[in-house]
Amino acid sequence: MPWWSWLVIWVVLVLALLGMIAWLGYRLFVKAMTTLAALGDLAEKTELLSSRFDDEPHEAAFHPAALGPAREYAQRWEERRARNATIRHTRREARVRRGKLLVSADPSRFSHLLRKRH
Image (cartoon, rainbow, N blue to C red; front, side, top):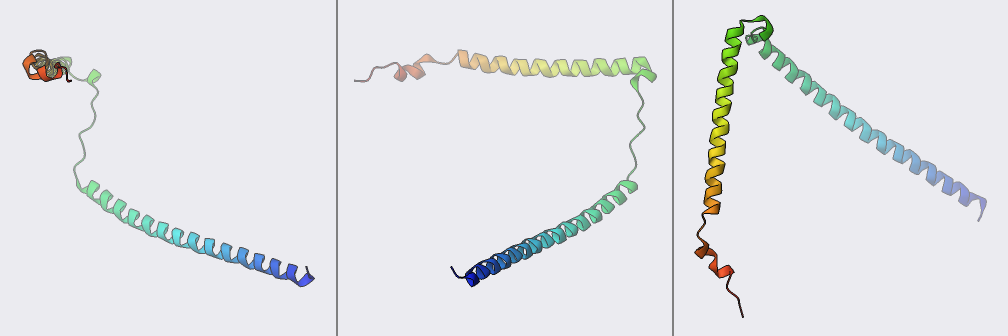
């Protein structure tokens, strides 16, 4: 191979490298600009949400149960316990009803499954 062919090969490789770097740089620039635009939108939304949050009344302060009236909290606990017991009983009754429907199925409806086919 003549000496100038190596020069052509290296020039082409360097130009390809520079082209690839330029293309990747452009893609990186476009992605960075898109990210900055999204961050600007996020900042606007955050500002809007914080202004709405400032306008709304805040929640009542937290009062630990250990420092409150014991009878009131005991009554609430008993009410919650009774409500949960009712929910559990209702679910159990529904399961029992479904089970009875499965157990009391009419076997004559399934007689075609027992017949032998020739």
